[in-house]
Image (cartoon, rainbow, N blue to C red; front, side, top):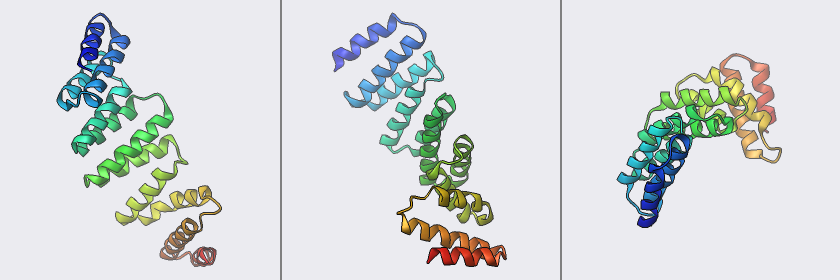
Amino acid sequence: WRGLAQALERLAASEDGAARARTQLRIGLLWRDRLGDQARAEQELVRTLEFDARHVGARLALAELYRQRGDVLRAAKSLAEAAGASANLLEQVRALVEAAELYDEAGEHARSAALLREALETDPEHVEAARRLATRLDQFGRAAETRPLLEMLRRKLAPDDKRGAYDLHLRLAGLAASEDRDADALREYRAAL
């Protein structure tokens, strides 16, 4: 594998711009995945960004490297940067939700919620982002903000997901009761049964 790394380094030296960035990424991945040198992999992946500052693949590879090292905050930051650099909406949302999950893991709940909101601005029907944000808002004591999220989740629920339906109806019933919307609360409690 070292011979391949050396050959790729020679190739990269002869290239410019996007081609150089692609080759640098391959070098970084080779050091990370085959040669097992995370420090060198990080160096090569960061070099990729010198040739293409918006290189999504390099940012995602760095996020994975940081995650492997247990550096959750750096991994989350790299994922958020990848989302900002990507032109692909699905990739943006996936990276934002993953970054939010890592920020949650690190106890950075406000950052997590902000990224989940950003993901939902990009894809208002993203189930995982809505589920996580609703839970986070409940924990922040801002349950009233969860209603549109919970209603969207109810619409997107699979017909055979009885447990999910039960949980959503109970949450919506509790929310309606807390807002003195007794008729809505009763309807949701009945639907849960």
